[in-house]
Length: 249
Image 1: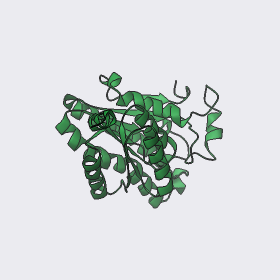
Image 2 (image 1 turned 90 degrees about the horizontal axis):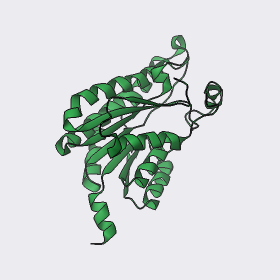
Image 3 (image 1 turned 30 degrees about the vertical axis):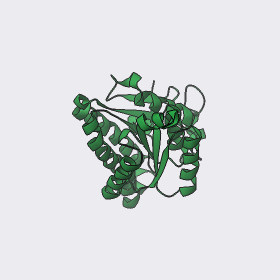
C-alpha cells in the first residue's frame, strides 16, 4: 500500500448536495482541499457535476457523482448507501440543493410554493435523516445547512424561498439538540447576496444594501462551511453564521 492509499483509506467522507455549480461546487472543492473525499449529488446538470468531480480529483481526493432527487426519500437512501459502499460512511453532510421561485405571495402558485418547500426543506430533511443513521453508529458527524438572509430576515417577493430557508434553521437547531450527545453537530450558514446562477438578475440590486458594498463570493461561503466541518468547530452546534457583508448586523 502506498502512502497515498493509506491517506485515502482513513479520510473522512463529505457529501454535498446541489454540487454541480455555485456554492455547492465551491464547497465540494474546499472540502476536498481540506482532506475530505467528497460525494456530490446533482439534479439535472450532469456536465456541471462532472466538472466538480474533476476539481475534487485534482485536489488529490476521491469523488463520487450521484444524480439524486432529494425530494424522494427512497432515492436519497439509495445514494447514501452508494456513498458508504464506494467511499465510506458520510461524516459531513452539506445540505445545499435548492430552487427559487419568486413572486409576491398573492401571485405565487401552489405548484411553486410546494416545489420550493419540497426541494429546499424536505430535501434537506431526507438527506439529514439518511446521514444521521450512519453518524449515530460512528458517534461523529457534521451537518451544515445552507440557508439565506431571506430565511433570517425575510425578503419581499420570496415567501416560499424565505419560508424554506427559515425552516432549515429550525430543522438544524432541533437536530442539534437531538443528537449532540452522539457528537453530531448541526449548524447553518446564511449567505447574503452571492453571485451564482440562481441569483442572476437579482444579486446586483440586493448588493446595494450590503454594508460592505458588494456581493459575496461562493468561496467565502465555502470557507464558513469548512469551519463547521472542521474539528475546530467541535463545540459549536445549533448556531447560524451569517455570511452577508453586514446585512444583518
